[in-house]
Image (cartoon, rainbow, N blue to C red):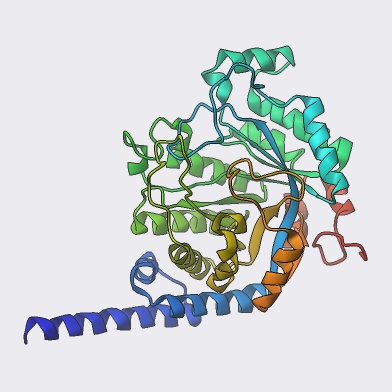
Length: 401
């Protein structure tokens, strides 16, 4: 047998393994990590997308959700120096270190007037550990740590405006999680990647102590112990291999199987930004994002799988074919401070383009309907505010609800 014949047999064998992996998924037999990696690397994109979208329709239905939010960037200070981030900063003369309580409330009030129901708090990781300016600001207001100040601001917004806080504050201790649970309807922490290589000198997570995978997995696990509806996910295209991407998805899957607390998995594509170490790094294509989303759906059929529409510009309807069932938070008031160059689509346009794909756009709260129904996942202090925003079907209350 010559080299050409051997190559044909090899290709045929590979195609057969791909077909078998897809068939196992369609028969609800699940995917192994090896199956998932094979599909990520070799499955024909059309077949992969078809299987993922059919699975989404069967398990999650024909609705695609979003949350109407206002974005509150409490502080840009951060002790981590990730290679791709323009959100974080060191103290800069003339630039406020933190938003003040009055500023936080003003933004939240504007959001409430625009019909928002979620207050998304984003901030840098533990800046007071390296910046004396941060410590001085916090101490003047009676706090020792940024996470204590965050808890106070989420309580202020909850009680003053009725908006439901959802915070993404970085690494949190068990005590931090317990404190924030009392004023947040849900919390989040991106795993990003389980790759240890990304912490090497010059890589994406070099000089970013809070991006240690074991540390972040510990936080996600503790959130499960405390029954907190939790958001996590991957940032793809930052130097990880496909095998590492699969490992990250299965790490999330294992934690959810143990605690049942992960309400959504967000797959976010890396976008290169000027004035960062990774300004010239290649970005993942829409097709690579589709492939990753589809495999995530196949690995976790029951999961709410999300990808932000603003990060793929006009191509965002293509993500629906990959099996997603959520667009994430959309703000009619504030920009995306993490990706300020990427404007969110207008909600009526998002609804129209979702409908053109044969799906229905629905507004949810910062906690998904299935977690609303689980009383032990919502603190009694938060529940009355949540209930005020709920319609009869546990999605967001509409004009006729």
